[in-house]
Image (tube, helix red, strand yellow):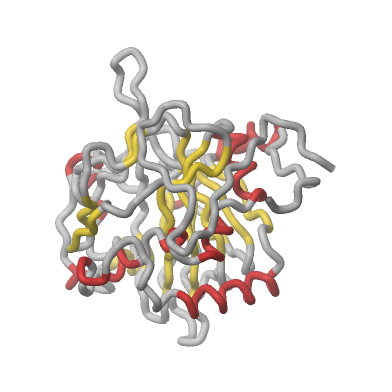
Length: 323
């Protein structure tokens, strides 16, 4: 798979910086011209949901849920989650036995609000039900989180709503995800927070604050401008958000997030469906993908191919790479 002469392992200095800051990047995964070609092919495939794992009639108008897990039916996205330039870097952080448990498109169009400052450890923030569960140690609650690899499929600029990060904020959770949030799509594009139009796809992330009077320290934040084909890798517990799209109609932003956890993490524990954004999708056809190493735990349902027969062959970084 891929270029087997390359070595994308993080160096000790990069790992130390990641541990301190909670992110690394941007790093180049594709040349801009290759990314443009790939994205043009991917977007032509998106409307065809005939082999998507979530049935159209379960989605209705819930476009957020329709953005999930298209790597399980679109070949180029199946290739993307296995990109060695991403997977080997992530395995440097999480270890060699690695699952991709979710992917999401993150589009932003002219006039779209920015995304609330937020952190996610269990991804229970919408419903109150954990979607990932790390093993606990000595009966203490597990901290959790996932590694997100967010790739810019188009230019990502301050004008079209690029990501914002707060380095070093990944170790302490400011939110209680078990509280859940109230969904109200009428609030989309209607709220300003700190003079910036921000929301959370019909939710208000402030509802989860442990301290109602706490406010994110935006002096720690920076805006992450990215070229097509560049990727940032970060802990989901890192405070992050995005700017509103104040640019031109033609200059839309498209990001694609791949989410990784070690194989000992339970995905959708005890769940038969996912309820978010005012809708519900069944997990009957869902399977996590083993992208590297081995699964010695058997906690999760895995799939070894997408719905078009594209095979997922996990990397094995423990073995020498042939030249």
